[in-house]
Picture 1 (tube, rainbow, N blue to C red):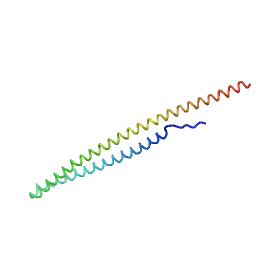
Picture 2 (tube, rainbow, N blue to C red):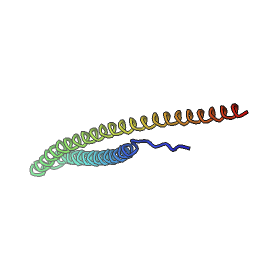
Picture 3 (tube, rainbow, N blue to C red):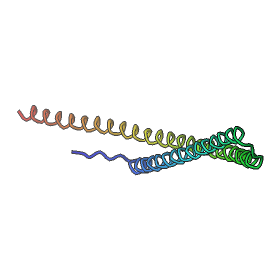
Picture 4 (tube, rainbow, N blue to C red):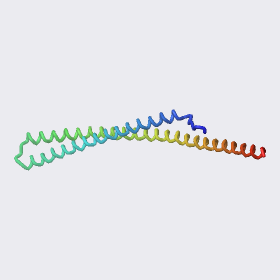
Length: 146
């Protein structure tokens, strides 16, 4: 019996490898985004702590120096939060780019898999036709031999 050989199998294999790499890149980008989001949450928590301390400083004995230092710390935290927000946005953009690349690679792989399926269907029809031809020849030979 004939063996099915897909002429573009090497390209399909390459597409599968590219898809694996794209999945890994997407996962790494996602992990980086989660890490940056955690850092942002930590900064928010620190700012909240400084703001709570500011309220305590105002309610207790008033020390101008402590209040100024706390206000500076809050301003620094706000600046760090803004910076971290841009980092998070950049990480989100990287995740989106990785997702788009993954989608593109998956579509290419699926295209080649469809081509393979169509080629296999054609192969099966060809084999069935050849088998029918062989049966017809055998029947004709048997009929004419009698």
